[in-house]
Amino acid sequence: MSTANVPPFPGPPAAGPVCDCHLHIYDPAFPYEPDAALRPPPATAATYRAVRDALGIRRSVIVQPTTYGYDNRCTLDAVARLGTENARAVAVVPVMVSDEELLRLDRGGCRGVRINALRGALLDTEAVGALARRIAPLGWHLQLHVEGATLPALSPWLRALPVPVVLDHMGRLNPAQGPESPPWRALRDLLNEPQIWVKLSAPYLLDPDGAPGYRALAPLAEILLGTAPQRLLWGSDWPHPGWHAQGRPPLDEAALHDWAWRHLDRSGVARKVLIDNPARLYGF
Image (cartoon, rainbow, N blue to C red; front, side, top):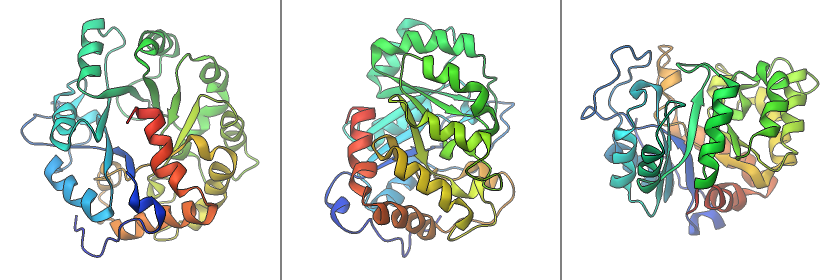
């Protein structure tokens, strides 16, 4: 994962603490779950630090991968190594997690819980709703990775949750369906809710053959940037585990960076998305 020729964010945001709001760490010092579906090669905090520095990033949010199950030690270790003043975590926990464990995670820099309904965790809305009520006093959020096709049915439940909700990877919408399809309309309506956030990340998961411009995603990016730039986040999804699990060739980090930057720069919301929004949600 070379960082050669990866330019930092240009313009005014480079002078501030740009935040990568979605990355994973895989450190061989921490064993994978025996039945983990994703088993990527090592991608340590030290390796990511080089990527972060090359991109001009100062803040990072490490998201617990399904590879480690409920064992958040690797993720919290990465927060400590990158520095708790500039790093946060999103944990994965069982719905019956103890209050003591939630407080321990909070002290370690955790600011949210991720539910991955695509890999590993079924979306039990009743149980997750109860968990959301427990993390609300901590000021945490709920991060959801769901198929875009489920958004119309999930919308009433999402609106009723007592915490901010972050939808991974642009809501995992299918670009072939288009803006008038029910999933796209559902996401657009959800973006008008003050507690719904979306990550501008992992375009290759929605448009696998679209590199480097991902033109099929342009309408979706316009909807996100035009509807709720104050609740939009950017993430690298480094080291791109879902992509490499398909046996795909390495991604061009510079091209991914350029794709995101061009959309943000064109819309005039770069500082908001890269600096201000993450500071507000993650408590930097």
